[in-house]
Image (cartoon, rainbow, N blue to C red; front, side, top):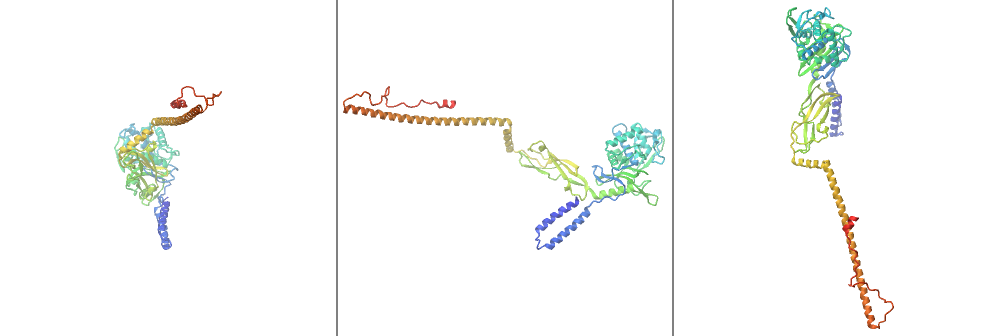
Length: 537
């Protein structure tokens, strides 16, 4: 991936460079530039390559404790013997019982006759004997600091009622934590073919354990004194974890910032170490299983579990750091806003997101998923808006792993625009279904009325044309009748004056109209009521 980024960057640089150069005049300069860039690519690739740490143990997990970010693994799911790392689960169950209120650190516990069950003579011990009474806190210190096997049996009987019941509780809790290849057969980790786990499962158990302050405090003690009892004087216990400082077993492995957890060793399991370190704001949790040890020649051992853990820590601190993959000052987007004094509002992350990533990894490789709440609800973003109002959420991830999420907030306040508000209210009024139905009805009524008016005017014009035509016909006929009457009158007078009256059998002039002759012929059609016609038609 890093190589790809270098290639893309150089490709863009070459493109812009060659576009600006006159290739004919600067041919040799272009070739020189190309060679120089290719050399820089090779050097950058070599420098930025994150090589694996040089460690020897066969089974390893290295993670950032608080976030669970995995930095390095090796054959972490292979089945291994846990040795005394078993005691992490034993102490975890006891501390969880304390936190539930079932017991307390100051509760006095008597060791029963089962104290030596499944123990070896040469196993690690704090010298606790049957009948001796210690506080639960003292037993936890014996188990974690001195890796006392018998203390684990006493704790088991106190918490579970019996060792067998407690071992069942250990297996049930492991399953709850997601351990898929772990089975406990005892409380202390001495060899048993049915007692096994994996480096990954131990990582899950250890990460849960260090989430409890009681465990962190006890396992981080370089030395502790357990008060005297009826069966023993006070016990001074020195931690078997040489990362905390030299002890009677190991020397030369002190690591600045080392904060504890647990060692383990049997011939079957090899040298094992679950360890934590805090430095520069980074808390690392490492699981190293199956390491070997060699003689130094001066009576001390070079122990692979410590050496590999130191190498893992040095590698992690040199190559990883917490970096902001999302800043609160970054403007993520500009969103349109309705009814505001401005049309847009900027949004930014409410919190920054940090991630423990390789120093040479570009933050641009992280994916961002953004959700805006108003869009989810199918609504528009509307003023007024206050600076800091939560408008959505952003999730930063890479390769399916979520590195963080934070709300998205507005960068400034947006006041309500009165004019835009009025416009919005008007638009909202006319968007109402009821209003739209009423408007449609009114429009239909207006259109119907307009159609009636148009029809009325059409019929009226037709009626007026008919009336004018009738009047013209009436006037024409009246004129013709008047002319005919005048002609007949003149013919009659002329006939009377010039000749003796001879009365023909049939008069040659037409029969006069009956009734009083007024000189006008009433030919006007009957008056029409076009309103009645309008409604009839």
